[in-house]
Image (cartoon, rainbow, N blue to C red; front, side, top):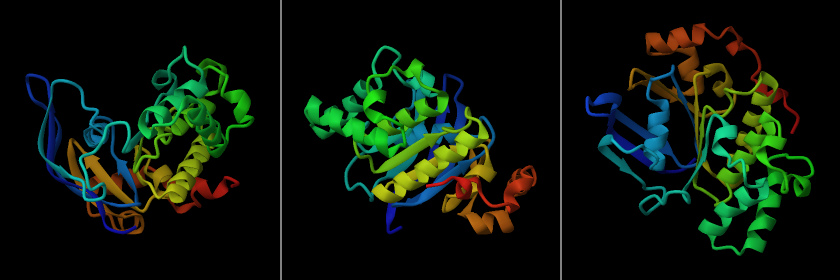
Length: 262
């Protein structure tokens, strides 16, 4: 890691006419190339933070504070600088387009490739996300794949435009524990190989602790603690963080990522 990729200063987000607070006064620096986990229960502001960074907040959201992008050197470009992996690939993938079409589209639009070049890149990416027989998978529709395969396709589509940051928003929560470990191993390898910054959003502190550099803990729209994994797990500063750790007795065991063959 070197340098700051982005800086959040007093970032706040409210929704609706009543101004329901989703984020309140968040100060956070994200280093270029780091793997940062955003931890917290449902409604704590994790996904709102991710969408604020990627420019995906819904209409009606009011944003306060500032986000700086020293790692990009220019204002963020939606769809180009960020790859976004959602929780449910069944909902995020288009059911009437083939896998190849969906991955190639991002590469064509954002990298200026021809359709032929984009399809070649799409097939290469399917191989990188460990899809067996990528040439055959290119012609498949999402419903013909398993949940784990669909999430791999979603990851391939997210990195098709060579983003600087990959955001995985609860990308493993709908999968069984074995597939979760495989997806975590895959994400870890991809961000290392491509030098991407990773924002890994989850409610599962045990899963995240096996491969990220730092953990940021959110509760009720506020950042309550952030630090290196080892220090957060061994000496949490927040009682809420301590309670999260206590709820996962397997934190002392080897992380799942170590059990997945490369």
